[in-house]
Length: 108
Image 1 (cartoon, rainbow, N blue to C red):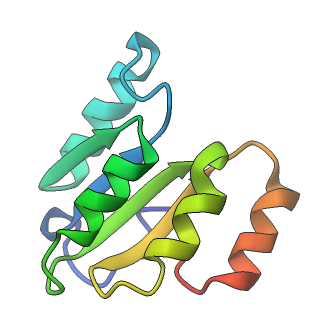
Image 2: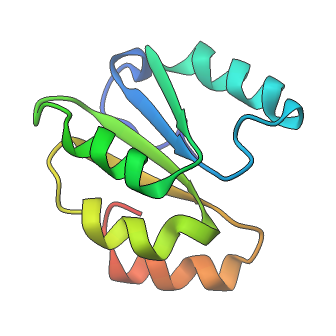
Image 3: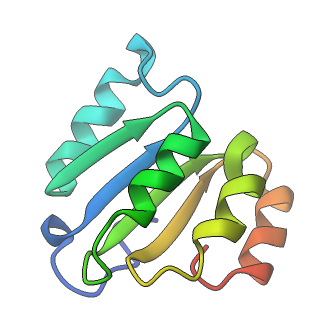
């Protein structure tokens, strides 16, 4: 979980969340919980805009990326090697599908 994989205070991290439904009312509580954990929360519903934002970050930044399974394939391979990306979490109900990402990318 986000709380168990860290190397210091989570308040020093930026959280980037990519999900087509991220701005829906059903995620209000989730957004509030994330904001309580990290210094900065940026949400995206467009993969290209999200990637552009991540790439524009300073290499000294510490970004945690939460991505919906629908966007995982196109995004993870493009951002995984960036130094500002500390870890990537895939929001997916299918644990077996998640395992292929875990084995392929060390930051997932």
